[in-house]
Amino acid sequence: MAEKAQKQMLTDIFVGGAREGWNMGVGSIIPNVMMAFIVIKALSITGAMELFGNLFAPLMGLFGVPGEGAAVLMASFMSAGGGVGVMMSLFADGVLSGEHLAILAPANYLMGSTVQYAGRLLGVVSIEARFYPIMFGLVTLNGFIAMLLMRVLI
Amino acid sequence: MANQHSHTDERTGGIGGYISLFTAIVFFSGVLQSDQWWGVLDFTTMNGAFGSIIDGVAFRGTGGSGARDGFLFALGLVPTCMFALGMVRIFEHFGALEGARSLLTPILRAVMGIPGVCGLTMIASLQNTDTAASMTKLLHEKGELNNKEMHIFTAFQFSCGATIVNFMGSGAVLLTLTNADGSMAVPSSIGMILGVIMICKVLGANILRFYLNHLERKGAFQSQANNKNMEVAHG
Image 1 (cartoon, rainbow over the protein chains, first blue to last red):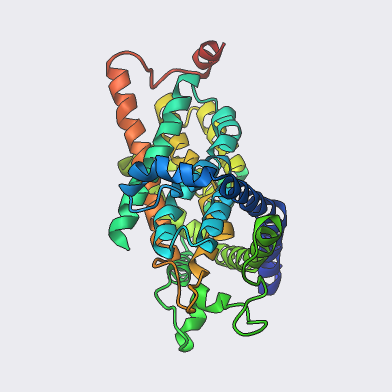
Image 2 (image 1 turned 45 degrees about the horizontal axis):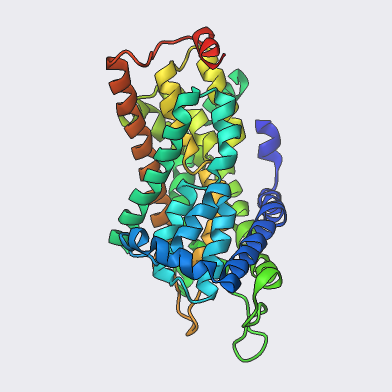
């Protein structure tokens, strides 16, 4: 395997990685981001987003982010790519600024895709069932700590 | 697993791995972001920008919404994702991950209370959650990791799984967003965000480490519980 890697042209290695990126784009990013845009539009049209924003304003205010930012974190539990989609959609609508995105970005990944990883990681490794809620609590806590850190850093 | 160990061990020890790791950190950190010649060593600079179609309007246009706007927007993310993963593979080829593993392995016990043998799995976990999950299970089954270490290590992996691939794939593009006036919108860098993510991953694993120590003292958790006991517990 090492020999094979040595013989590869640098350009081939780059192209291989870029192809992975393309597959990721087509297979994950585009569908996830598109879904996020549709959900955000549905929430906006029905007025639910405004209610949602007001509901979470006190909590998210601690991190210097509008209440609507909570939608990013909820989406990220399902898929980090979806969380990025929600961020982009809310940025495009002028609800979130670049500063808000910087604060939310690490949290989106720290909490990201954990619903999927519960099966793919916790299930595979055979984590004791009683620790599942603790694992989800920890990733949420990680996200909150990251938002505080980013608020200080930027 | 054993093959992977020996394969990686053969490639460690070279200065090339450290140089590759250092170059990767500089490349993605944003410190060299510039229109000067050294911008060639910066991801964001080299990622570039889409041109305008008319009067400063990008191909996505303005005023779109819903599924179609989402599609065009997402399409614009794909080149960044491709470029980032292409570069990650190049740095990997020159041993950046082996360099990182050599640096990490001796400090794992101090930083998270897990043995150095987790180094390879830890690096794998930054790339692929499923690979790392099966490697972790194997380490536990072989007795390299006890029950407590396995839980701590899994907590580390669970938060921001496949860190590098996921973040470079969809997150790096956040840093390329611009305001209406063309200025960069997000006041951060890939390096800063990845740094915060890694700090929080380690912090979360340590919170679980202290909680498990507490449970162990109360007799509610067994570090040395073997797999048979665990199967009974899952029962």
